[in-house]
Image (cartoon, rainbow, N blue to C red; front, side, top):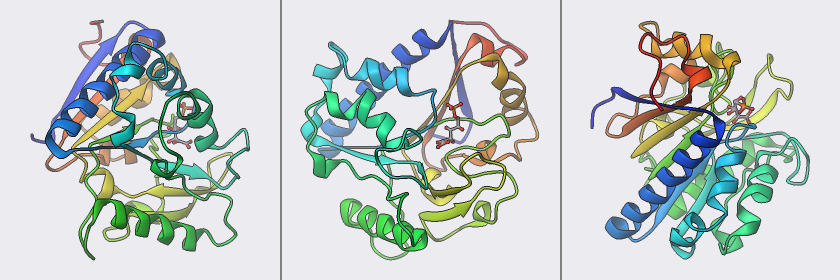
Length: 251
Ligand code: 6PG
């Protein structure tokens, strides 16, 4: 597949959750059939919660091979796993505690670590172990879920951050001055762009302007720099988020 983005517009957040959860199940099935397992990086923020809740309910929940699924995270705030701001906590509450997945298949980022550079290096080591990559090789996720901030950030890759230029480390500790919780851990572009498939989940009128910018000609914002080289890129939007795109509609 090339790097052109496929844009899917659905009616509203429930329709987006349904479509996204179904996409996860389909990607998981294909990955398990072809590679014997499914590796996914979850998005944080609020948008994916409903998708995770759908995936945790029958019938979709029963279509997943949970014993062959590995769950990672795209980013984490510098908080502990029980903090209300923890991306891991959201995923645990909405999905992971509700499905039969073994705890050792869930690899959370240790946002609470005093030494977040060490936590990033640990996460990179775990990725290398699970994906059995050698030094210099990148993990290839079957599916990476991402969100979009109104400033164009995705994962914890914020505009102007030095981490945007990262070419080697798959995981980094970052300071995002503009964010309410500025200290974070994040996957970097090399990993996102090595994925087999990337799926952005975006809802709401407040995102319409940035969606238009990111998907327009000047894709210079971090979310626009996600272009999986040998993978498939899908933007899943609800109508409100797609409202300013030239051919808005669908769904
Ligand atoms: C985070 C995220 C971040 C998020 C966007 C959108 O930890 O903050 O992973 O990149 O996806 O900020 O967040 P909402 O879905 O809450 O709008």
